[in-house]
Length: 123
Image (cartoon, rainbow, N blue to C red; front, side, top):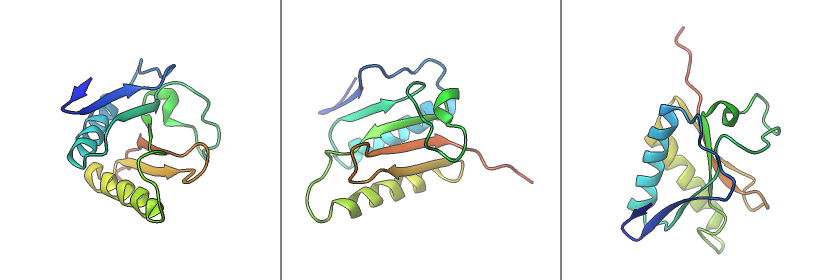
């Protein structure tokens, strides 16, 4: 899918079957931010697929409540980590409290942005 010069793509093997409406909304916000800030191609690296056992709780991926995005090649240089954190913080702000946004494995081999619908319970 093209948005001007930017392209939204799925890494081979990514499954979106069962993606929640909340995550469709979140993806729209992420893609709009990518375009607005001219980050280039938006690549979803995981949806309702893969092995997500490193989390301290059951993964939202298995129930359609999480997406991962490729960020490893967005920037190079000494300011790279701060730009990754700025991206994470901007998306946290845009998506608000019911979404978890993490920059995972920064500078590691599995670096990615994790976005998950994790609604706060009203008490």
